[in-house]
Length: 136
Image (cartoon, rainbow, N blue to C red):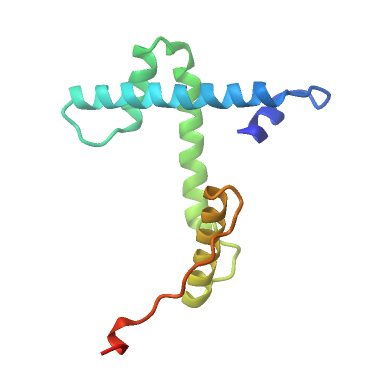
């Protein structure tokens, strides 16, 4: 979110940390509001999966109808980009395929980073798992 905030402003404008935090909280609340209303629209149609049409309807119900055209255009652009990414080998592909071992190692590294972030930056050492079938 901080990156988006900075990209939207002229380079000479600074945003106080408190203002950034407030903007982020507003975004979270907005997403919660739209998600909740989308769920209501979806439920009224007796559907179990929220579709893009439900989100657009929710925006209208919540009084954000003037943004529907722009949101729909962004959604269409996202679909185009997603299709292009899948044709190129995926969003995360760098042109070279990973072996399964490399993918597992990368996944473990990302899990460790996520755990570190969740623990406030402290990296909790992972205890090696013992194979209990060898103990008998």
